[in-house]
Image (cartoon, rainbow, N blue to C red; front, side):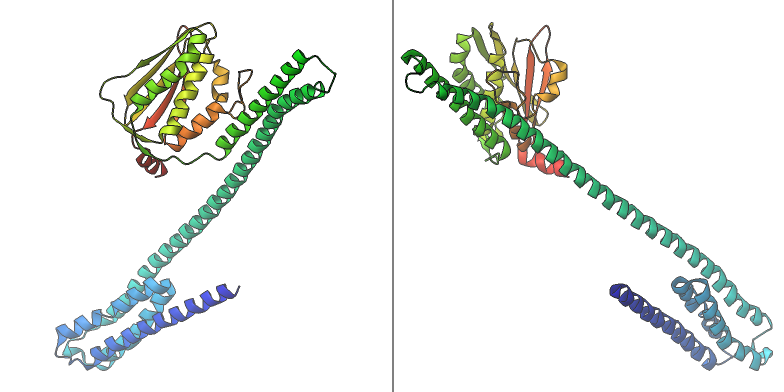
Length: 375
């Protein structure tokens, strides 16, 4: 309230200064008009037309009322010399009509100024309304975003509880049976292995969860993805051979180096390749391809497994969604986060007659890609 009062006081003072400026302008024109010799008719006429200037300014500042007041003041200062001067000196009754012109010009300009002022006020009101609406939409968006975050946290907690409950139940059951004299030595060793296996599963789950919740920012350096693809293929080939799966690498010549975090991108390629191998328990081929894609490089992993059902494609990158018996459901979610941090993305498609294609699009210069996306 105090601020509004201060604004009104400043506005009133500003208007008084403007009104005084118009009055002083009319006074100066009148002084010049009265003291110019009547024989200098051309100069006198020029000064006479100067009366229109403060009227125009008053119309612009104050609208119709201000223009008419300025015209009245100018007429009062203009008419005496006509009334008290002999017409043979150069004046005529037509000059009374010129005094009327001051009111006509002031009226027209005042009406136009008032109309423009009302239009400006309407636009300002509309702008304020749009600003309020935009602010309200932003608030609603923030509420929805927080609601989505809380929902995601709830789903994450429920999934995490489910994933932890099963290993804990196995560990608890095995521990109960390890009491002295409860089972034979052979079964005791089996239960010890169960405890170790489930403990490792819990450890892997927590590690993946931390990687998903607090991903490390990429540390960029120029990297040869071609060498990385061969390294991943060699690493996976041993376990793949046990399932009668052959990992093949297809690379075009003269591929450019890419700006990325080599450890994180290696993790993405390894995850996609291992998933492809595990999707073919009966054997087959996994093809790793690398090719230019606009201003990016595309890392493609093809398998000959059953493919991905269309209704499950959107769920693949959701936390804790998995079709594997021993999977945590965080591998693809982490891989997608890594690619997004690099300015890229992982897409999924099915190939005919069977198999899935995972494609990771990696910009050659992720920092530039992120700046352009921010614009």
